[in-house]
Length: 91
Image (tube, rainbow, N blue to C red; front, side, top):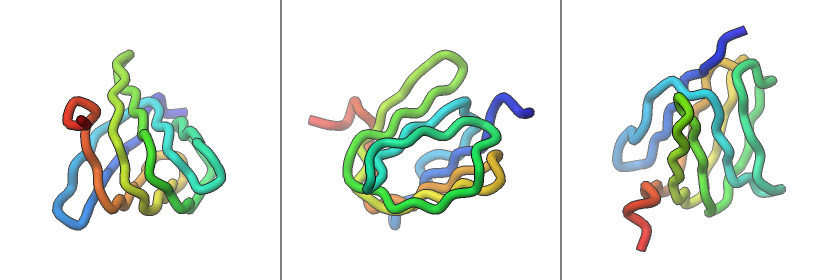
């Protein structure tokens, strides 16, 4: 099984992220959920909240303004977000 998966985050303005990661936590409508490599296919609506991305023992946080997430076959996650800001941009 792969140890990473491709995460893409896109807003109406541009593609913000396209990288291999080990874990992502997303703010779903029914609560926060996490995705690891090999996750079952999933389509989920997102609410405004915090997205956590882990890559090589480093965790980055982002504020997401709602949208949708699609997990395809456990090796690719696409997040279509209304807005996205890195934690250091949040004031």
